[in-house]
Image (cartoon, rainbow, N blue to C red; front, side):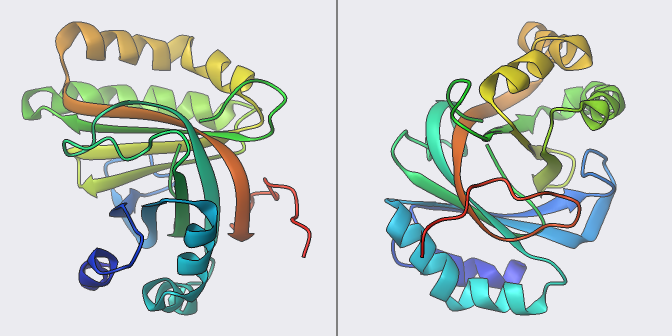
Length: 225
């Protein structure tokens, strides 16, 4: 993964990218999983995204080495906050998440098909213990939620720069989870106690997919050839 940095930096049309590891299990743990990785990339349009993900050598190398590889194509519908001082997910910009592991973001209103939610946070060192103490309850609850179609915890920097990514059948199902229980309590603590030095929340429509991931049914309608 580290050796892919220079290739991503030189990839034509890629406006933002991150290489991410994952936690063990479903990803929402502080123990890394060395077998699951994600590439998050933003593009100016859908055609560029599909062309680069299909043909660029860096993506082809990762797929060739993977036991399973899955790419979700996402269209941003809302984004708040910053990621390393940038706002990479402006509505209308296409995002892709080819995974040798999973990746990112939510959607629009009910009836629009699957939506994805991405959160990214840089945790203040003095609040790390409090943050990770909350994670097991949230992980158990999202794991038991019958609506969630896919979920994963990712990270740029272990324990500090954390990302969550989940896919839901519609925005209403996603909102029900976000507004109740352990997740809502954690959000209140984040706001009142200033746990994060930087955070970003983005919502996406799932517009397409390529490949598959074990245990996850097809999420996007098949496209006409």
